[in-house]
Length: 428
Image 1 (cartoon, rainbow, N blue to C red):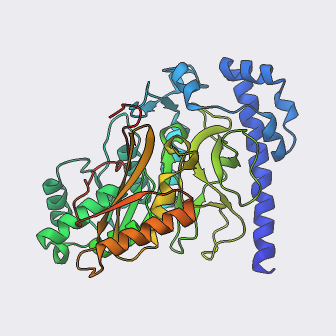
Image 2 (cartoon, rainbow, N blue to C red):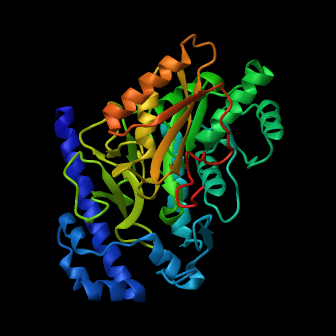
Image 3 (tube, helix red, strand yellow):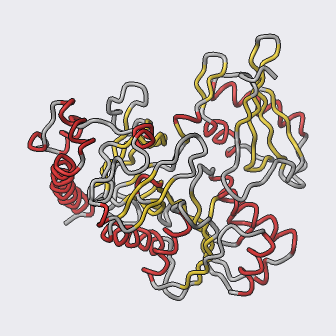
């Protein structure tokens, strides 16, 4: 059998499994979740109406506001005595979103995370330094679950000061580091500044929780001496570990026996054409504690058809471009920070860090892009600024100002980097 024929056969087998699990999930929610039963009844949908995968479009969407309105346990679909753990989002933009896990949910999550680690080349011989926080947030605990399930050594350092992080990295001989990409860059720059590179054993970096560019990826790999992998996930969908890009870096494989991914128009909710960029909606297929139907993640991406060079039969999405709630409206044009990032990624002489500063002066909006010059680039900054202004105009359709700073002048973060400062509503 030719490789493409084998891929199509695997696609058909996966589709059959997804349909059976979707039917089971809808039937269980109709019986066990009063909230979803009311939603389905309002939509005029009963479990027996789901006969094909295309019938998922009959089901209602779920959004983050519904999770907040039902805080803390209104969307649980398992009896309380079966919920063995809860996690919650940070709640920085409103009420926390809480999710519950049964024992099987925890087991599935550990297996998905272990699969991510294995795809990144992590083995039981590795020592894995986990830098994200532990507690109600899913990141630290989720990574530890996967490391232990794989059989590697977990070094659960968490979000300690940089000095302690580097001391542990050297003393414990970490070979894998996990965190946000912003923290990976910060650690790499500190390692370079302190001359610690020769004392490290790192070979793999797994980063997520925010969008990061190919230019940032290259810089982190250069500073840390690692191969990097992009991991995705969110609290509402177990946590991190629902997908990872493989060593060919041709998109992110996701675990389709546990999820159905759709790409929808973020305004109309209608399906996007194949290959078109839109908002990711995810339906859980094996979740017991808190299953979700067509959860609107707000992440912007697209499905990538066809087989990957790695030979894995798991489907793929592109790396996340941005979020619908990150969109900037500037002089009648809708812009995502990732579009600015994309321009900078292909431009010689500037680094991966940037800040978009929006202001309103005399009733007119202005946008300034602040970016750092690469050390010893030798290029004239005025000329670079002019070229960047022209490229942004040609590729995005807006006129901006550009300020090129010394390398290291923009703030670094141990969490997610802030990319946009908008003072227009404040009238500053």
